[in-house]
Length: 416
Image (cartoon, rainbow, N blue to C red; front, side, top):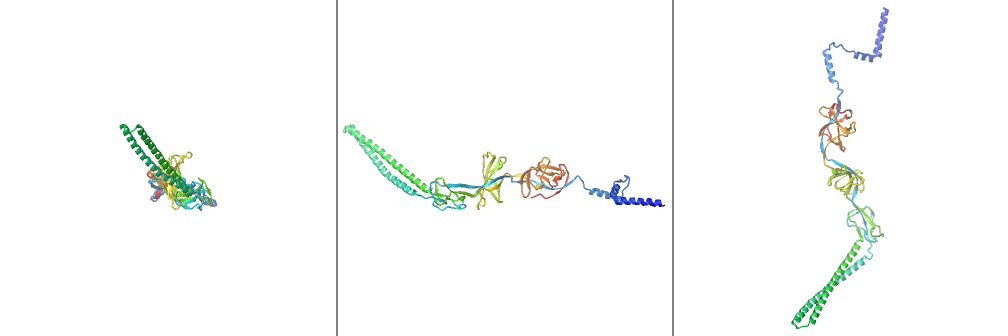
């Protein structure tokens, strides 16, 4: 009787040990024990088993977030880097010599067309002009005298011709000698020579007038050159010549720049030169953050020998002169429109070959990688091309699938 009690106590101790210290192994052993194939299940157990089977997820399906994207036609663009340039810039120089007698204008001042920049001392130029005008008057006075002499010579010629004709008739009828006829002809020849001298004198007087007029014009032009004026409206980039400075021919008086309108100059690669046309709209962002709009006014037909790029000029209104000469700009020139999709930047991914693209799926929910071409990156998203007009694009979870994987998509509204 005592032996039975000891055996029972040992069995209870072993059972408690397994229940307390080896509980996990015991439960695992119990769960791995198969039920008999012929063990009947109650209706409640069968229903519970079916419900569990229906609610268990399929481990081969990946849940993702996607958008149904529709292609749209957008304006394409060519992006250039460039700089601003003044529409016009010129250094105004002296055309004659003289001392500056005008107060200087300081750089930054605005001048209009024709405003005086530098005034030079006339010196003896006024006297030279007066002398030239006096010679012109004198030359003009010689013309009437020459014209009168010519008229007198013509009259003498006519009189001599009459005398010759009369002497010839009398000589033919025997009423006058040959000597008289010869004398009349000699007088006629002298009268003809007098006409030639009178014509020469008149031509000389007219030439004297022309020479005097030229001298007057030179003297007047020399006086005009004493006043150096602005050829166009703009800003002074330098001070004008200082009062008292001696200027020689070619000495700079001032530099003027015109900033309204202003030019944007960029250089387009030869691969994109056919996308740019004269008259195309353009937008530029200056390095200070300002944005300006204009049109292409010039596209070079000759490439730069070093960079193989073509010069592009864009004219932009600048009435407030806020855009300066020489600022760095990023230019976007509008080109012909093309079809593209607007997608989130996060939807872009790379395949094993390093190609940029997106993960898509069709009606069978099987994924497929499609390469894309980036057109433009904006704040709303990325515009990409080379996709079908309608396509389902995975935006979340694309990094966890490969081609052929079946997905369970949750659709999100595409960007507007």
